[in-house]
Image 1 (tube, one colour):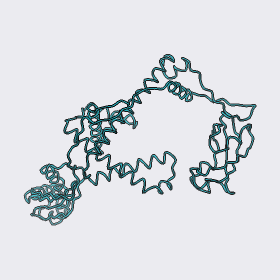
Image 2: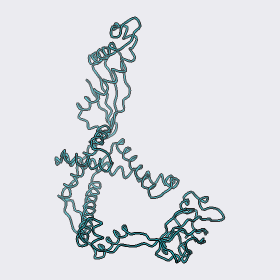
Image 3: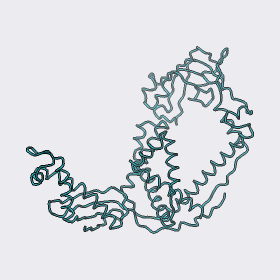
Image 4: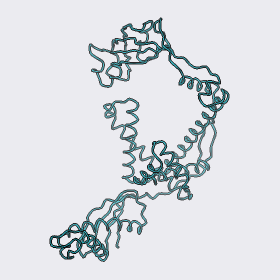
Length: 433
């Protein structure tokens, strides 16, 4: 096999590969033998057709099968021979194939970039001191109690601030339903069963004030002045009238902080619950601070290391980032029209984010290689098991899906990067703030 390598860019190589004629002949013979076993030729039993007739009838199909087998095989051998670290699927072109002649083809691939590692031990970073303010534990308990709250029906009086009003409403602006002004305002246009916390800043400006004193079964009108900086620009600075039916009044009952409350959270008493909450809060903050330290290390590595990136890897990561951004924006309630309006801004952000992530990955993987960082098989299996539980799938089925998609190595790489960051943190010069 003859191989020549052309540097298209720093991270892209074009391989010209020549497969010897004897290899072509060997593979041709093997493929022809397989065809002979199953080919149906009029006048001959299956498996008995003469070779010359088979070759004339199936010459094109045999040639395609020979190429299908030889090209991947000799591409892999060429990559191994040239010691290339390939990070993309090959783009095969300019195939020259003929019976009893060498096979020629070109394969273009992206490879791992070559670069000089920066200083990565002894980096200076800052870390916040983990502590809790006196009122934070009480606030956490109030949040838990709020989650355990019950709602009781209220009769015999009108709505008061602090109640939950169960209402149906429809709104008009400039003589037409609000939803007709802009699709983005559809949630504000009408609702048949809406729970509204009666508070000064709840829902829309002035809405709750108009309902104070209303009783179940009453119909009320609420006048709303949308502020000039309202998030839905089509409604900003305009007035609206809401027609409201009072369906029910609910009073929120917060359970008392006692040992019975603690048992709902599998704690023996309030003292144990408070201790557990405090431990969890401190642990979460410690983890956030550790993550911040790792981010500082990555930022320093990126600032001190510049090199060209494989285009295909950046493109793949950009697509993944775009999918995540769009999904998150939709979950936040952003309309598709708004997302499209910001498409250029989103794409620019996704591309830069992808470049930083890809560059950081290459740097950390090189450091892992330099420091001989490894991933233990039990760590990988634990990660797979955790991922399977989150996906709600049986471990065996989930593992097979990872193998089929080639994502087991991706998980291994993620763990390798995590271990490498842990190593860099252990060697960093940490200043506690």
